[in-house]
Amino acid sequence: MSRRDFIKLALSEALIGMSVSLLPSCKTAKPSREPDAPAADTTRAVQSTFKASANGFDPQDILTSFDQGEIQVLPHGQLLHEYKIHVISKEIEIMPGIRFPAWTYNGRVPGPTLRVREGDRVRIELVNDDDLPHTIHFHGIHSGNMDGVFEQVYPGRSFTYEFVAEPFGVHLYHCHTPPLSTHIAKGLYGAFIIDPKQGWPKVDHEFVMVMHGYDINFDGKNDFYAVNGIPFYYEKHPIKIKIGETVRIFLVNLLEYEPINSFHLHANFFHYYPTGTNLIPSEYTDTIMLSQGQRGILEFSYKHPGVYMFHAHQTRFTELGWTGLFQVVE
Ligand code: CU
Ligand code: CU
Image 1 (cartoon, helix red, strand yellow):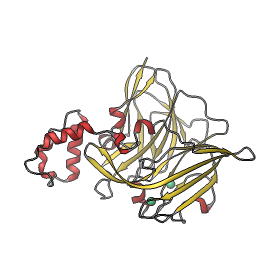
Image 2 (tube, helix red, strand yellow; image 1 turned 180 degrees about the vertical axis):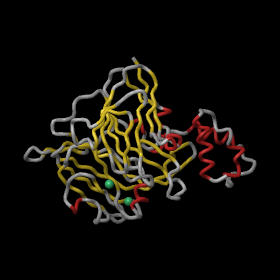
Image 3 (cartoon, helix red, strand yellow; image 1 turned 30 degrees about the vertical axis):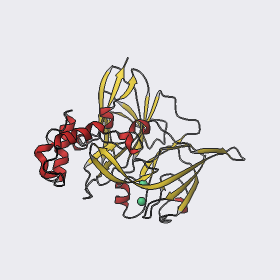
Image 4 (tube, helix red, strand yellow; image 1 turned 90 degrees about the vertical axis):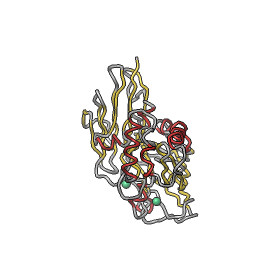
C-alpha cells in the first residue's frame, strides 16, 4: 500500500467518525514502527490529543481575525497601516499524526488576513527568517518595485513594501519566488481585504476563507484540501449562526497544482460579488468556481434551522478535507 493510499484509507475511517482501528492491518505502510508496538493505542492517543491550535494558530480564529496592523494618522488625515511579517519555516500537524513542513507568514497557514480601507497607506516589512529567498506579491494596484517579484528577499534580510490600497475588494498575497508552485504549495499566502471608503453594507457575520491544499509527499499533487489551514476543521467544529443572520464570506482560492477550486453552499443560495470590486452582485447561485488567485464575496442568510454543508463541488477535494458545516439555530 502506498503512503497515499494509506492516507486515504485512514481518512475515510476518520470521516465516518471511528477511531482509527484499521491502522494495525496497515502496518506495512509505516515501516518505521516497531513490530510489537501497541499500534492501535498509540494511534488513538495521537487522534485524541490532536489540537489544531497546537500549531500556534486556530482555524476558528482565522475565520474572524482581520489584522489592521499598527495604525497611525498621517498629517493629511490618511491612515497608515504598518505590518511586520516574518517568513518562518515551521512543521505543522494538519491531521492527527500527519505533519507538514510548511513555510509560513508569521507562523500561520494561511498567513494573516490584512485589512485596510481604500486610499489608506500600507507599509509591510517582510523579514526573512528562513534559509531560502522569499517575497510578498500583493494583488492590487501599486508600482512595479513594490510588486514582490524582482526584489528577492534573501535569508536574514528584510524588505519594506509600501503602497496606497486600491481598488476595494477581496484580494490576496503570496510569495513570488521561483519555483512559484512550491512557494505557494508550502503555505506562503493569505487574504488581503480592502474595504470601500464608505464601508460594506452591514452584516451580522464576516468570515474569511482561504482555500488551499497540502502536498505532503512533494509529488506535485495535493493529498489534502482545506479552508483556513486544517482539513475537515469546520466539519468537526461547525460554524454557528442564527436564522436570518446575514453572513459575508471573503473567499480566496490559493490552491496549487489544480486548475479549479469551487465553493458550494447547501440548501441555500448566495449573492456573489466576483473580486468584491462591485457592490452589486453578479450572480445569485449556490456554486461558484475559482481558479488560483480568483476570489470573491458571498452573502447569504439561512431561512431554516439545521446543519448545512459547504464544500468544494469537486467531490474528491471534499473527501480529502475541503468540507465544513454551518449550524443554523433559532
Ligand atoms: Cu517563498
Ligand atoms: Cu497572485
